[in-house]
Image (tube, rainbow, N blue to C red):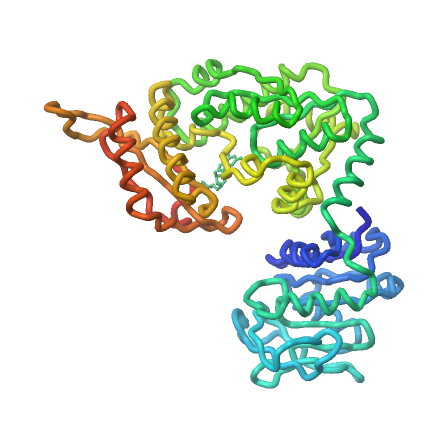
Length: 504
Ligand code: XMP
């Protein structure tokens, strides 16, 4: 897709959010490193992001300003971007004595242009330590904070700077500021998932031709959308599904069946015994993950055999992450010859990543436009190592059976009472402690189950959900009465941090 808005990344924690907001407003935005400015193509506007550094430092991140001027498009500098533009226009920036972080008030002094349709005073979100100290001649102040300090400038027509972050929701009218800026481009909003889909399908057709494409599927959103997209592009796609025996109750058959409904035959590789054998006796969390990750690669590549093309469901946040911290494959901590093979294929241009420009919610929208049912698009996240991270300690067939049954009861109840879609992720885990109970006239000595339901912001933080007591009671009763080997049920009331979402 042709980039409409180039966002230059000076390293702020909010840069991805800028791109997301701009796309939500219908403009196709992408993130570029400052050094990539000359290769942005022909954007209709440029946004310079905030960043943690000070523009007054000797080796502070910089841009090719002369090139930026030749683009002749509106430019918006946010925070660091504003300070940089103030310097470029001949002004000065001074380190401030304290870091300003958090809410402030914006009081616009203009009611047109960048600040059209704003209130007389609204909350904005600050996160900076430098301030512009000396304004170049002819600089217009567009807005001040509650103390009368300028927080928005325009140095000349089309060149703007704001000290606050319009991309965060704490800046209450931030979206309107971004919308006003985008409207100055005189370019209409053009980013729609349907056109993205059609362009991608056409491009895939041209690139793939009659070659075979391998992809791994798990039943998760990204790999499902990927496989269906390839299929709709008319390509000869071979979706491979590794059943590692660590899936939830009935999940393996369900994945195969759901794909069938979508017109795709997937190749299921039954590796359940191999995984169980490889995990036998292992109780250390990192080792378990390592074993599962490596064995997955082995099983997948053995099934794939001769690969002409490999498709991966890489998303935009992974791409951004790898641009700042090295390639994705090089960050995988295993020195596995199969990873080398992926790198090799990448070098030869034989890896397709058609979702690499999309955020997760955009992948869902794409999936919807491909007629993938909501059950597949809005399923809770499920970790790659599967139930292994929900059974601390050694993995055995019996323990997996217990956790599967308990999970099915809990998730079934969440669905039945309309809570499944209200929580971000939920599951049952097995606690490998055994405690005493009474069953009938006999004492029991059995395992405990922990139920967990959380809401989360991108999995970075999570809070436990106050589920109705009746739902918890029903789940607990059913688990205690029907799942053999369990005599106690707990509800996990830990936030992340300090806990994580999964147990291992
Ligand atoms: P934690 O437990 O770190 O989990 O709070 C955060 C989110 O990531 C999922 N998760 C994984 N997903 N492979 C995955 O694909 C993994 O190894 C993995 N570990 C955790 C977890 O389910 C939660 O949504």
